Length: 320
Image (cartoon, rainbow, N blue to C red; front, top):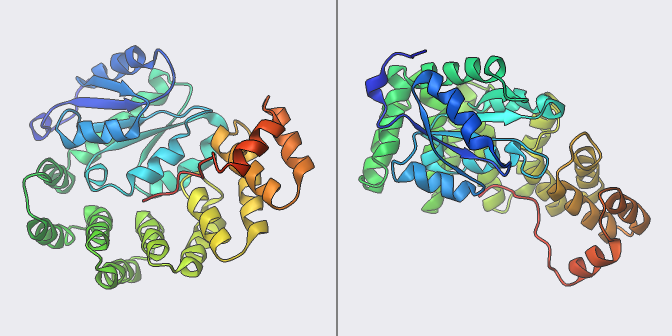
């Protein structure tokens, strides 16, 4: 099984982000159907990005598990320039399939587990075909050159590539990210708002704008955008961390609790959402509910309470 434009890839190597034992061989066998290989499998998203940045991999596959949700990883990848220049396949557990809508809108190809040839190969093939088209191939080549170009050269290239409709959204997100990093919030906001005004479809540009507003200490505007995304696409781990953070920043504890409760009480709840939900319940004086929640996951409320009081607990993995 082959796809066209083989020569456009620097290498045909993928990196897997997964905390599940034994998946390397399975994904290797599947990707070999398209003459691709898996160069590494890692639990660390940072290690996967580094591999992409150094040319060791040209495609990222983010696995989904109870303990390591792909939605959280996807959110972090939207805040990385190299990742935005890279094709990404996101796996989803069946109980989290509702998260596929927003993932697709943000440019991720999605495959639902369990991983079988019938479930994996079609979306993997579609991902390759999309990123082998001329405009996407140009964006990939820009990704290869990130360590070799100056900041001004990168911005100049992005302004030109933004004129190509298929990759316009990705280029605007990269542009806004680079402008924000040098403190140019005004031009970053203008680029995103101008793009959204011309094409108001909900995609990664909305989350780029959320990042911008959170970094600029404007949580109310960020929360309004996130509420729009939530109402249209449902609650997702792609937006939950920022939704909860912005709600807390504007004093809406109950709103944050409601959002986290959907994740912590739903099918296949992840430990991070459970922990943070318990923290908020505890801070709201709802100790009985927090204790019951932790007991259901085999946790000691007293130990958790002590860690929380000692500030030995991290928050949700919000982007950037």
